[in-house]
Length: 256
Ligand SMILES: C[S@@+](CC[C@H](N)C(=O)[O-])C[C@H]1O[C@@H](n2cnc3c(N)ncnc32)[C@H](O)[C@@H]1O
Image (cartoon, rainbow, N blue to C red; front, side, top):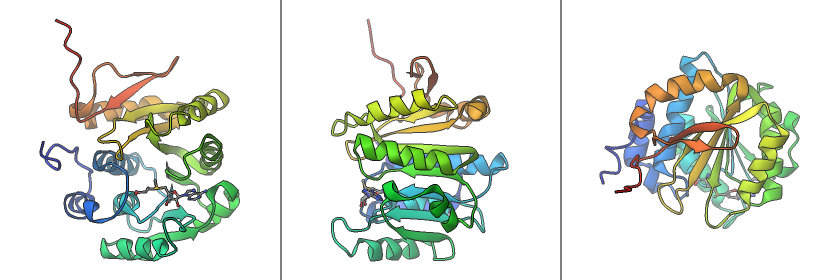
């Protein structure tokens, strides 16, 4: 399989160049397919008139963060949040050096060293100049309790029309995260799954994209067109909500 040629267009030349010739050189975990989809979602937001800052919880060395930051419009900020202690104290320096090397200078990003679970929404929004966030990627601590806290923080900071993206969903190593997601969706009926981004490998895991219920139809209409080559025909049954599944492999099981 040609790893680059069959990716959906990320909608931005700088992101395409980074995915082709930079992504693998930054130590990290998220999938390139998901990075292309998420960059295109950011572009879609810009096309829909949504502007403003974005954030990633669990920025690590910047692999996914850089793809997101390169998809922003001039003047928009990307916040990278991490405790920056694992696997060693040099990770923050490597994050900033990787950003710089790939064109995300200090004027386009804010590095926030801290525990997302202990962060108040106001404190996070202050880093974004008091503006709410249009896109939040959650990839921090992978426990039920931590994901529940990160989801609460993201929901409190979310802009009108914003997207929350959850990494490592349905991952064999973190089976209980789904329990936290289900409880969150039941407690927050104004938020619904917009689509599922299928896994590439065990480290490039599945992501869930969530949006406000009032934005679901508007986003989905555009997704059906933008990602028509990636739509797996049966979709996902989130009981009672149904949403799109985007995959590099859109085959159905052979039954004859
Ligand atoms: C799986 S890695 C993230 C990978 C990264 N998104 C990438 O693109 O490669 C998880 C990161 O979450 C960070 N983390 C864990 N608990 C955290 C917390 N409570 N607050 C902020 N970051 C946390 C870890 O330090 C680690 O860097």
